Length: 412
Image 1 (cartoon, rainbow, N blue to C red):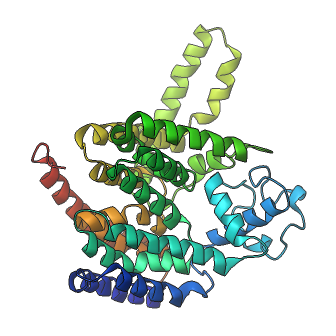
Image 2: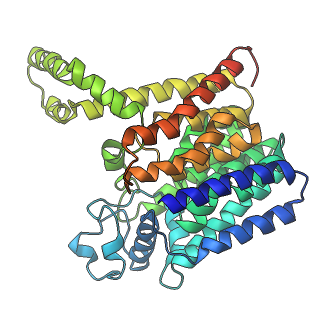
Image 3: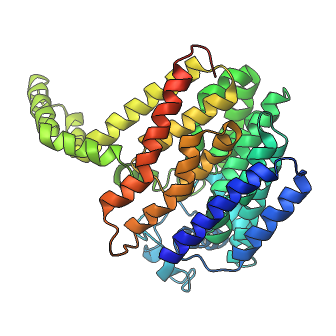
């Protein structure tokens, strides 16, 4: 881990240098540089995350004619599907959480005729598509494209660890590009595919709907419905999403603080007492039995974060009229208010932070790999120090940016 973080730091400095010195370079040169960097990790086995093995497992299950949403990997119905992958699949007691468009990508590149390298190559190609889309976008395009092409986070998390996020981000940027060129039908389709690659993209729905209006909404809704229904044969595509939403947490500051606050206030017990009184006044209807499992601090904390996120998304959509800053702020909100913040989640805001040269999230994109020390501890790096390195400077920079942008009404 120490060597990895040192190499990552060197790559971070290189990407900043490239963003300043290569911002006048053409797309072909930036794509060449980005491709060479990603090729260095393409054939290396993932060693920090095991998500890609779940992608391969889902592809093999689908090839066998079974819905990946129907059974958890440990279910006896899947015995013998892919014995070489089974020991590497994380959370084998939970059905897949990956949406239908992601499943299509898994099967296309990661099935028995493909495998790990084609799957990583597909996501690396999507990563390079982001570089091209940044080159063609407005604002600080070439600066952002050069920074992203050289940035070690997409290189290590996409080409190295094989995460699918680059595909969803590329589709989201494509949707914004289509909206900018006044093609709302194509924008709606691209956005639907982004959402069905990873649900995190849903955070951008309000600003995109505001810009695309009825034609965008029609295209988006029809694509979502058609793909969802097509994927529903055998089991609901929701899969293990509910368990992810109620059980997962990693590298969040707000979530554990809220849980502790709920415990100290004894809020779940108080709410349960009030609910028992209501239940008695209603003469104990049957539906009240299903409510009891939710009176615990973790659920209350998640519900509070969910409510705060909804308020934030509505507020962002009302304040900023331009779609790009509004999408950026919406994605930032869901990342900061989520109980889970893996390093590769930062790929969703990195292109926007690069376009706007936003210091807080650019810093976080360079610092977030230290969170791997929470999974792979190193002596001398306690949890408090890891959070201080990751979130201390980020909090200062974020406060400065927030005061600067909110201090002048109407500045996007």
